[in-house]
Image: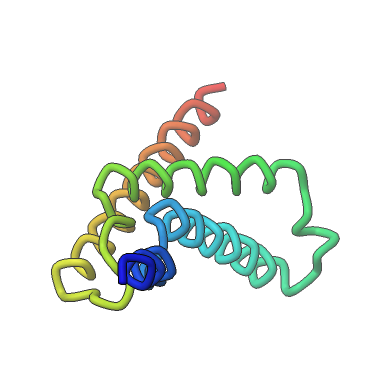
Length: 115
């Protein structure tokens, strides 16, 4: 009797992904989206798009999105039970990341315009 109960508890499958898997998958999607945007910008000419500058930019963009998603706790909810409040959190995190990247680009642009 106890063996059957032990086996049923130990073999029970957890249907939820770890929060870190969800966050990692979201960062993978951000990186792929960045690469697709580069390909579109350069008319699918990978020779022009694969530059060391863009590789460092992709790392910076993924890092900014990582901290914005981490700050707003996007990865904590279950993917199956996403509701309107989760969608608003995702929108806020993307808006915050876009704002941070925009301010960064503005500061870089002002700095290089003075040189």
